[in-house]
Length: 332
Image (cartoon, rainbow, N blue to C red; front, side):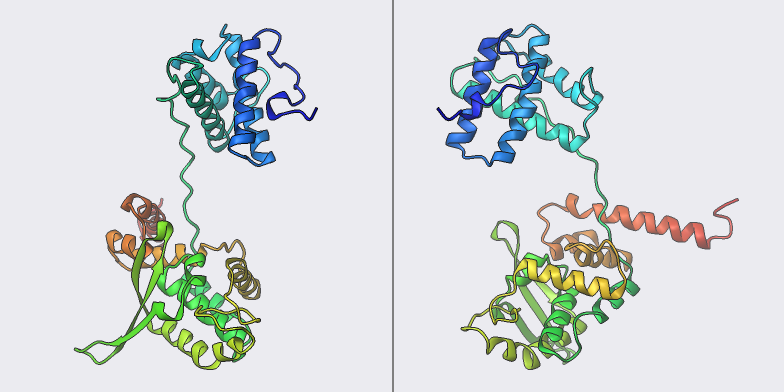
């Protein structure tokens, strides 16, 4: 008979002998994850590893079934994850949070299935991961990156320059940029100045739409691509409304756009350039230039200004650097 998720080979220290009810309840939950929720093998393995450690911790506290577990038991386990114990080193916040998610899922299942009268993990929150500051590159580095975008004048080079200019000029996610159709671009004329203005409509997370202005450099680069690059690429395809096309005339994928960015970064001699680098740089340079954080929030499409405020921390660090380097009485 093929073993189920709950009857997988038992690792050393399995509590099946000392706490058979707990062991059976854990096996039932793992079977539920494998059969009913269809978790991938690697994900299921992570759940099994985290929950096996949890069950051993419960047995060491004298618990023989999920119905006996208290909130203090769960809290003690979370504390042990972060501080380490006799057989395990301390876990980082991200790994500990994953284990807590596994534990909370187990107790929700136990309550729903009538294995326990309440959920002792409901109020226990995963440890917050450390806030990672976004990495932006300087304006000079952005210009080097844009200048290194593909062979000049060639259809793919024009596409690459238009793509990168648009990413930096509007703060778009790569997935949003490659999802653009021709109709998502709009041009107009400012009545009071006669200057050409442009906007682009992005569809962000959750299908939320936002309108973002397109600056002169990005507009010029996209126009050059539309006139001299896209028609050539489109001739190889079957017709698509996509703005950015691949060499076969189909829509450029997110992976293809990331390859464009990576290749330009290599040619420009830039390291640690990620798919979000130009988006981070867009936000940081706007704030450095005096833009209001609420405006940047709208341009980025963040649901909460709290998400955008992480960029203000980067700007404060930059202010400290400039102050320390430039003010005659900053040091000493």
